[in-house]
Amino acid sequence: MANPSLSEYISQSQRGLYQSVFGPDFMKKAAFQSSDAGIFTTTYGRKVWQALNNQTRFFNAIPRVVWGNTAGWRVRSDRGSNRSLPIKEAGSLPTVDVSQIETVSSLPRIVGTTFGASVKAVFAAQLEGGVGDVLALENENAQLDHMKEINQELMAGSYAVGSGAGATSTFVSNGTNGAGILANNFRIGDEVYVYDESAGVTQNLDTGTAARTVGTIASGTMTLQTPTGGSIETWANSLSPAINDVLSIRTRAGITSLDDVISEKTSTVAAGGTNSGVVANERYNLAAPSAGDWDAPASVQMNGGTGRDLSLNLLDTAIQKIRENGGEPKLLLMGHDQYFKLERLLNSQQRYMGQEEYQVGIGSERTFPGTRTGLVLATYMGIPILPDADVTKSSGTGGVGQGSAIYVLDTDFLEIAVAQPTQYIENRDYFAANQLVVRGLLYTMGELRCRNFFVQAKIGNLNS
Image (cartoon, rainbow, N blue to C red; front, side):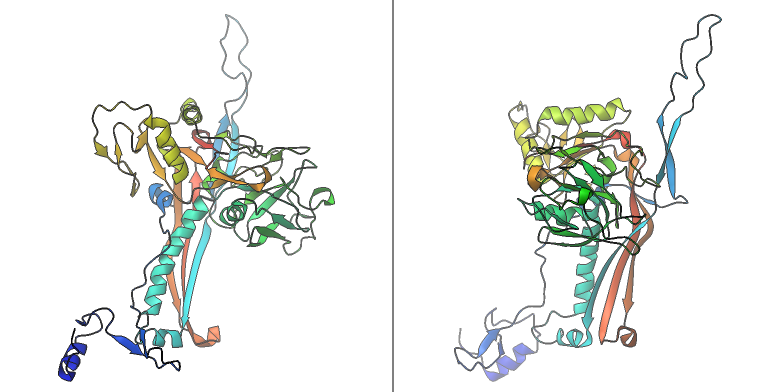
């Protein structure tokens, strides 16, 4: 197009940055370059687009309730022996016995997200080519990150298998996807168990009562930290960590995960060697976990650390176990890899008598659109299917990452109890910070609660 006159240029420029008729490449920011390859560089727009997966599907699907006046509850796990029997004429009464009552502790956990900007950045962001209100931008991003962190903590796995030797007080899992499993399943401050596969010994405490915690996680290597008052801990029998050793959760620093609720402390998760790697985490939220504590019989189908393909038998068994324990499955939760495997399993069995697209709502989420014939899945046996990208992947023999787990859940007994809804705090006290910065904090106080472990199920060691 022809160059505009000066009057046209002035008239047009007064319309503002977003209403130029000169086209996207005409308005340039002057920036003289010594090479003189061109004296104009492109001015970037202010809109910042997300290139990250910010979905929080499980968090949106699970019921959320007010915390209430409780720090835990008790679970009746056994009826008592021979307290109910037929009585013959003039026969003896049944033996007097009592119910087995287990104590479950549940206290709120805190998740925080921070952001900040210097006063210079706040000013410069308003100039030409800046992002605009940088504090508003970071606040918006922090809100997304905060909810994503909660969803990822809810979806974290409860263990990782070692892929090789490391130094004392470190754990290495950097095989195929192993580094990602370490980063996704653990958080700094988590208390952990260490299972020495070759010696068949679980090491969970320092000398005294101070538990070992996660210090750092970087590039597939985790450093275990000695708490204040604890002694320097080596692995069981003074051995250095090796392949197929297992690190598992004892207590979370953050929100308890679904895998903590459903996992078993005796699940074999690695094959080979003198002994098989065993997950040795205690039942979640017990008041004082120890070696003999109650391990609730949720249905957990592992395969000794060896990957296998999903089958309908595995899925049907999980559903069956829940119904045998008096529950009714309300939700199938899985990663996208297992979603497509399940679709392929069912695809060959369909009889196409007409299709009708429909969706099922779970909480504030909805399933993918499906058809009544199941060609595109929305339900299986009438149970809604919800894929979540954050579902934990199994860690198998040698620390090799496998496919995502599948959870079959009776959500009537699962809830996110909120002690304090998400709060926003902003601080502009430059003297307290000793810097010219504006800082913001988002925090949420709550916890995942399960009131019936018997009616939840998990399928692990699945191929991706």
